[in-house]
Length: 560
Ligand code: DGJ
Image 1 (cartoon, helix red, strand yellow):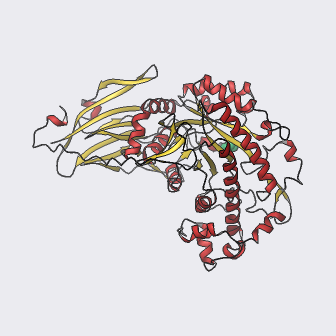
Image 2 (cartoon, helix red, strand yellow):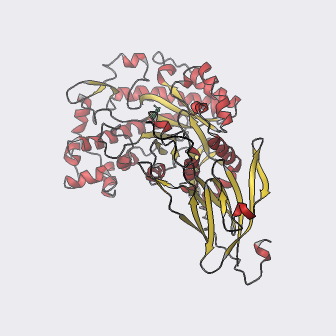
Image 3 (cartoon, protein in one colour):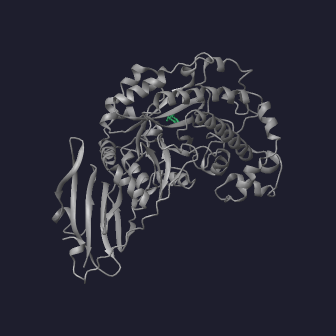
């Protein structure tokens, strides 16, 4: 029986979370509907590809995998088995421009051609001036010409293997190379849209010193702090913003040079670096978009709590510098955290607050990746998820991630609609930074219905006792439980996940299960498998996605 067939004694009206007025606001650049762009529709900003919302079910390749056509050829069977739809692949400046002004697009074309042949989309990563703080991907003619391309220096004048962001020549040379890449992408791909987004540089920031003290940098320190930044920090919360806190500590000046406004220690120096890195990226992104305005983002090496600037890449877009980056890099479409910490959702929440689309380009590829992906898409309207060194997955089984990507790929239109309607939820037990798990129940209100969600405990499959050196393998042994849930109609929802149990109630009436349909995957397609009742719903008391495999159930509720 459906809701319409109930008698008047049964409360049949279910107020589903309101459907937002569709408000389309294409990003300033990338307005053309024909190339991939961001669009805000109702409650979500989504990546639009060929006119439709697209979720990046991705994985990033290891750093050297795309450095030859032959090496790249080896990855596709694994990526196909994992049901990825998008691959994140580097483009290396040293191989793109081996001689100044002479561009070789072989290693741009090979990922595009191979991705097309295997039906994947691509996000290209520009390993230009900086990759993990360092400048090791610049061409030999840049590496060996320190006069033209000055290095950052520490306070004692020791040169670092990092090009100084204060050099206009370095910026212009990087811009020329990046613009040539984007021009080539326009020529090769603007009618096919294999390439969806481009990452500008990789994990920027100063290491192991917090600041560049080269002559160029020291001179810039004496410049006045731009009003654009001062205006921003006046409205920033000093609890979250290092710049706002330091500005207040120094008497909230309305003008002054960098040390006058923010102080001369490493904390102040980090604000100075953040602004100049952001401005460098702003110029780079503008130069690239002038050729082909694909969405562009930076990825961020996060700062483990308690670490000091320089112990992590200082001046990158870490949470306490996000306002500086927002003001300094306005044309950057997204600021994307590389999350290698166990308290995954806490970090992504900080980047959701930036107000730009949320994307996680790098994260752990453990068996917990599936739950994190579902949470990110369900709770935080992310546009995509991408574990690192994805082609290494055959080292260990990860059916969960493959099943999850396969199902999300199939349900993408429904999920995108639920995101824009604000009718989607993430289900994840809270994992603390130290890896302990809070198994407290969580509550979701859907109209009159109250859903109480609990999670199954850890699977003993993977021991956590041995130290794990590879950051992308942190968190082995944590529970794989988690999922997402979205409303499909009055009193109806679909839940996807593993190790999740849901009980239902309402303020004044009792709630029962009208029907629970289990779906399963056959030959790569998910479809209805069987009705669940009896023991499988604990005699009508709950919906349970048992731990282990990915499950999907379509649930209808009623009140009595
Ligand atoms: C983060 C970097 O962005 C990646 O390119 C890679 O070096 C990983 N770290 C390795 O863990």
